[in-house]
Image (tube, rainbow, N blue to C red; front, side, top):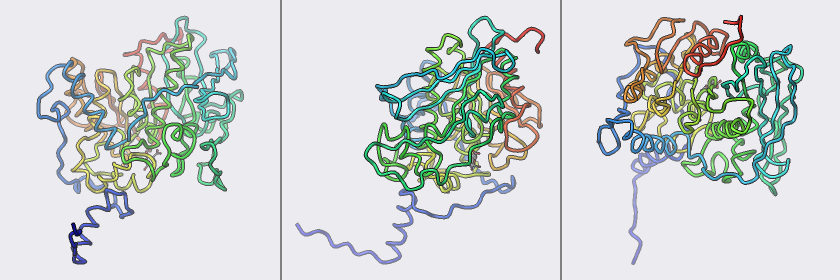
Length: 446
Ligand code: GCU
């Protein structure tokens, strides 16, 4: 049979190309960010309690059996990409240092390398832990990835420097400049303000962290390096449309850190608060949504692709984030560039996946790029799912004023100031954890 002769006018072909190109992730210029509240266009949010087939979810059992898996599937397929479920065979742990007199004797510092393959040549993540010495029972843990390397989270000279180690799949030629586009490493203690290690210890919590780039270097080529190729090759552009992005890899790493904590009797792995700032806040939310072993989840200024609603189209948008960071999300997410109305989910449903576990969402007043109001509205809109479990949501109708935390099982604050994680933020997280994870504070310390 002869092939039908297809004749398209130039304008028809152009229109078809316009329709197809965004779905292929072609480089179109996304619309600029809206940062004027009066310019926010009307939008509507999907109801987290209405299942794909239109049925209304009325019980926790229905949520668990039907809606939760459905939403996880949508976030996996359309937003972050699928997290591989295959267990790596060669995973093993190596304690590389232990010092019971760290921080002037207040804590035990431990460094543990989590090797993801047999031997000690393959991808690995180096976990740094501080465990308070004054607590008798294994304490709860704050677990989060860090931006600047483990040595940046405290000025403690005993922390090994996180040098960059890029592990390429065997047999592939090394790029000429593997270090080319990495962020410069931060100096020792350079991000100590963001970690408040001594304060966390004095309040009776352990803290554990690893450098996020151990898992997936944060650049377009990062998906060709370290963890991702252990599961599939293809990198940022060659992966499947629903293949995981860097946020997925980082979130996977948080679960692997939790696997280790489960083997460490010096801490209580059933009381782990997973937290993160900015892109690592997006990561903490995705980790907490997928892995129900995390007992509490904290999002600090996570913004677009984190706590902020996408359909509100304020500040950073789906188009802008995919353009700047093509390796963070699934390729499929690019279909929603400047097309957020078509998304079958929004980020309040990511927050709802954390229910009924305690969730803290925090914003900063000057961080309009991350859309503080969109983060608040999202936390509020997760409320009905918490209510289904008899748990309280943010508990207010309007966004609270700056520096006035609100909420119950879902808490929220907008702090005065810029995009950052500060002592004020930590104070709220510790109070929240005290309420929900019941730590034992050091006597004499509040
Ligand atoms: C950029 C990006 C944000 C992200 C932030 C960060 O500003 O646009 O989405 O949260 O970097 O991680 O620091």
